[in-house]
Length: 408
Image (tube, rainbow, N blue to C red; front, side, top):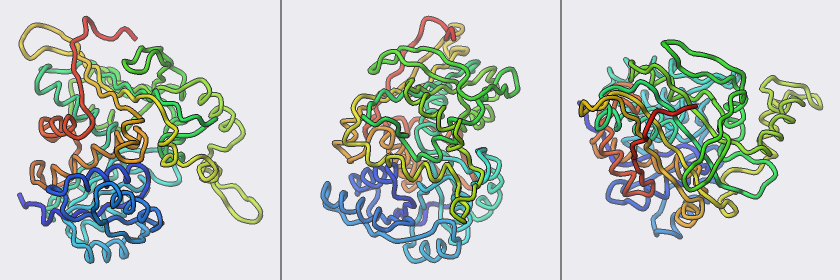
């Protein structure tokens, strides 16, 4: 298999996740000796570069780029000559950036799968379709190296490698117990967040997808480091890849916590049409209501200073124990402090928990620890080096055996 051509990286996107990822790369010069950063708004790149310079003294080269313009992306890649492009832009831009990587002959990594602008639907089929082209080019594309997807998939495969011969039931629990002090704000890109939350819920059961209305299934759960929170059944992209790569799964579900105030605000916004992605005429021009709403909501990258509390994200899996002792249930999780994340990188924990895994995935690729030719999901990689790096780079995890499968 062909090695990565260079340890130079080009990061695309300049939001909170990118800020964390670039900071963490800069803190590890032995892995990332040269870092380049580009986005549509160069001033945002420059702000990240200034923070990196202040925190660790390293210089980051910055550029202005429209990631949807493939020829411009190809020109930038050829100018920078990275071995890896780390896509931390919007999911709509995954395919153009993959095209640019193929044209320029570089590896690719992202944290979220593609979704078309005009339809609130995300799935892997569009990116999986690139497998043969990347394989024939001798290149690697790694999909979903964030927390969920990303770490949750690695958690699952670590359990399957070390604890469970098979996994019968899987529940992914994502709790943000932080308080940012705003009436209503999203913890990552508002447009993507609201599209995700308002979509119908889907979970995997007995070999098929079961769809239920958005936010209609609620369960109270006591999260370590946070307390009791209401979590809601949702659809999330790693369910699609997990059911593919863990074919024995009988049931797989994804849960996310939301406070009552968030739900009330979102319900009102939905009822008055502000979460719609259908164009409307306003003062002689077409606008997308959700894009307008995203423009007036607080930017996630501005919430770090005021956000207090913890995130708690983990996986509960039930299956046949490797040691032959019958069926067992394990809970593996990370608890991340918003305050500690802000102190280290200037960003809150939701950005931190995605940006750190993006850095780790990139590190494993540029060091040739994770290699392949084609398009890969996190489940296809050896979980052990990733899990070891989580402990060393700010996202330590714990695993415990539960007395029985989940009752919800």
